Amino acid sequence: MTEKRRYYKELRLSQLRAITELQRQRSFAGVAAVLELATPSVWQQIRGMEDDFGVPLVEVNGQQVTLTAQGRLLAELSEPVVQGFDAIREQFTQQAAAIPRRLTIAGPGNVLVNELPAPLRRYCDEHPDVELSLIDTPSNPARRMLEEGEVDLAVVGQLDTSFPSTLAADEITSFPFMLVCSPDHPVLSLQRIGPKSLARFPLVMSSLGTNTRRRVDEVFAAAGVRDRLRIVFETSTKELLLQYVRLNFGIAVVPINPRHQADSNAPYGDVQNLCFRDVSSTFGHEHIVILRRRHRREPAFQQAFRDIVRNSLQESD
Image (tube, rainbow, N blue to C red):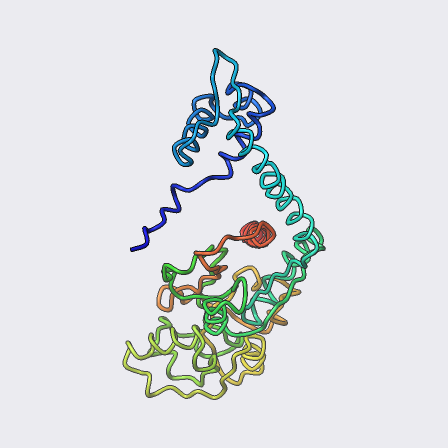
């Protein structure tokens, strides 16, 4: 029967490095100083090799250490191994620098268009050597692409802030759900704006499968009015949804960044022709998060992107 190899007990590079250096330094203290180790550690490495090979490798006379014939042989055999290993690090560093650095990010169009332009410009200025790729896709497909390893990061809207253990999340901002309508819409004259009162009017809705639609449907269903809704238009594009509200085609309940409501150059278009009412007490908030895979070493240029986006959006809130 073949004896099982105990790899954890086998010869270590640190031991080979110690004996090659010992041939030059002639003392354990000298080797320890060069290798930045404690002197007893050097002694243990040499003794470990003597136990492993079953032969004496050194003779100690006071502070002076002399290699035996076997020790000199091992040192000579070890020298090219140590030098070759050291060359690997240098060669890897040089050749790895030539490999293009790529960062692929998926997210819904409204986040890519409305929230990321400024941090993206800053990132490209600070990291011109990184090949940046953006994929426009709704939040849930973006998250699936991340989980399947098709992208490096997903910047998405999520209703919940709990995620599986395989994902890590940075929450960068959150948007309240808002009622959006024309300034003269009769819904604004109601004393209380709730799901039952909203269900009386034609609705412009986000598409099925989006987080926004799921939350709105859940609230209307809980109020018992889901089957009474008059949905006159459905779209996955927030700008198109607001355009049809602006045309007085219907009203909408959608998460909106509050800072865009007073911006004359708002990314969603002319806000002067829209009226906003906060209904987050009923419908909640959408959380904008950067998702990444947890059990994967993150390169520094990817972490830099997260830091820039997080700082940029939090400063603008």
